[in-house]
Length: 226
Image (tube, rainbow, N blue to C red):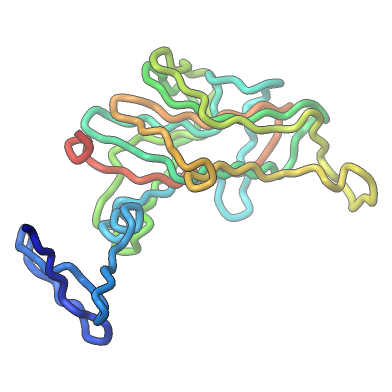
């Protein structure tokens, strides 16, 4: 019969040990085990990344497309061989829609996609001392790339039938028009996994809309996944 033994740690400090050494499980004095979920554990490790298109008050002018166009994504994340990413949150904020028209947004994973044009995006580590830097190449507002061609998954889609850019405060139906679209891993209880070489694209369709797009993702060596 196997027994698991935990060390009671309720008020005293937790000591760290060397890499690869055996450790006690942590427990309260009544034997209740304590643990961090996998996402928080990766955050503590320094594996949580943020890619932000548009900063502070400077919005991106998205390439004008009437509908979602996978050759002109708002954000394109190219994941190299040997690296894997797991997106946790995608947030698209439309500062303006341009001409009043249909607005679409979607997130797509796959492989075979190619970035062309656009602007390089700085990826930051969500741990302030940045123990790891990203291996991915991220670009915003692609002007004419190549859509993914293999194992293509459109895992998130949202939008409006008729999007309106407000110029003044209005007490009519248009005041209810949303301008922020968000996908979160915990809302859907799943997330796609992009094993490099592969791509993650966030696409939007608007008539010369402007805005910001943020992607939060965990990045790990593929060897940790397989």
